Image (cartoon, rainbow, N blue to C red; front, top):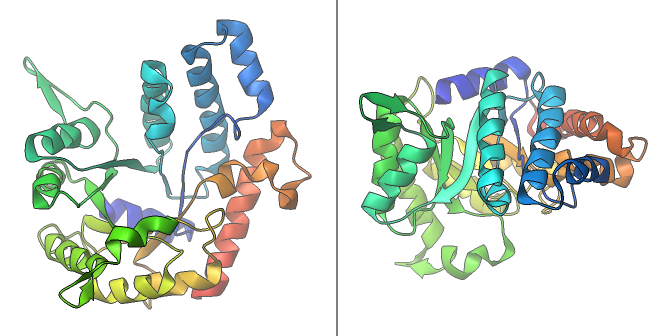
Length: 307
């Protein structure tokens, strides 16, 4: 799957992944109101609103971006109907040829991690039938339970040619409380990065490994160091835009040929119609505003990285 991701990045000349993280503040009021009229103030109404919102975004963006990253928590909070919207979103994105990175941040003891890996990347067997429950192409994985939590995902990736992005240095302000702690004279995130580099050697694609890493755009100096440590891992870079990451910070995450990283933007794209910069777009034009924001992001990255 890493080969497909890189191929799509090259084809669309856009190392961009759009985070499909729907919230009530981002979904246009007219969409929510429509579904409340149909189903009342229910979980089902919100799930239907999420699906309509996502479909509009996907239809506007799929020809311009290689990948999407739905954050499962934004769907889980609406219970089983929300998870159904997540499932529909993943399926529709794949029908449109998009690579789907499930932002699930799983990581637990071995048997539980194995169950998570089966749910999001693998298959379950029911009688004689093998079924893929959610069937994302990649998943994000939390490494802080150690290799017990990662190994089941690697095993599933090997079997089904899927991939993972391991959290190494995250974009949130408090990430340093643990990730920056000094361990044997070095920050913990560097040691995690070395482990990711070791895992990466087990499962190589043509140019990069199926085992990637998450490193936040808000920490460019750390990203520069980790790019050298994890030479064969693609880096998923959150934190661009709404979280404060700037285009000028991104060059450290890429290799000299312009590969090696994919930059995520969520609110900055899917909520672009709320940004004064795109004030000419109405609520009904939320998807067109998102496309305009993608094009601006593409230019910003190209000017900063030189690709």
